[in-house]
Length: 394
Image 1 (spheres, rainbow, N blue to C red):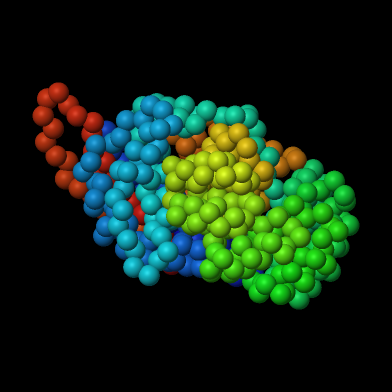
Image 2: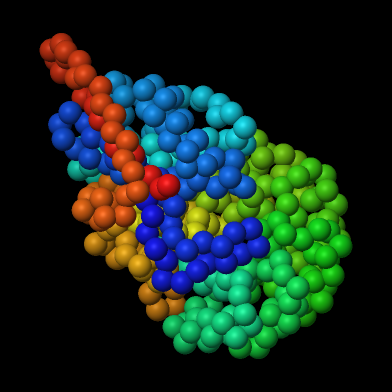
């Protein structure tokens, strides 16, 4: 799926001008449809669009295609969706989490719609509205200050600045001045710094009252990150270093971080994201519910359910909708509003309707797979999922 952005989104690892999601559509033999989304990031999970498509079509989908749609009654049943999808390694990748997420969300959406239920029946909201952060991307200082003033005007009090460039210190100080002292500022280097440069910048801006610095170093030995944390004047958050549940356990054991950035696609879907959140809570680590750049309404909805359900959430990102996308694939407004606030979604399934004509409009390619409907003895068993459609980028 390739939906153009309103403007280029830049950070130290990549410039993006369009979303590059893979959308999975599943349909059971009663005609109920569900949608899921995953975002390929070679520098995060190791998945590319091509490897995701191969993995989904050759491995994951054939393993579940003729299985009964799971019955869902409680939050614990989310783990059943995860177990429903087999563990099949993806060569040269850190994890197949984005692939698992795309298929898992589609099955979950379909299963809930079969039961005429909303996601909130499985994940009751702790809060009725979620407050999102703004993000100031890389670019000129003039553009950064323009974005800062716009964010202040609409009441955003939490703002993240993309860093990892020569003018980091100047930009951070200028943005702090533009936003005022009430704003909560975070930094995200996307692994661009080495330890010396990171400490140089972070000590220089320590007086700017920075809430956290995200992924200051590239993913690597956890012992190096733990040593860095001891010298860092600002709380450390991990993103690219946190992909799997084993990553979470290792980071906790090494006392290497203060915050986890949990992104639904990166972490493998709802169940695995919630497991990582539980590990963080038990270890006293703060939680950010993050997002992938260019998520459509599908992943935005999944992230909002997690952010609304968890009791302790420090920061939330995502739900930019048409603030970033030239058009979203759902008519249901998922974009945050004044002060970054957005309500919990209460519609059936994941809570958003997907317009298939918009999928077709922005799809670069489709892959369609089906299975033969099996003979079902009486009494009838739950019907299997019998077809899937992948909508994918170049």
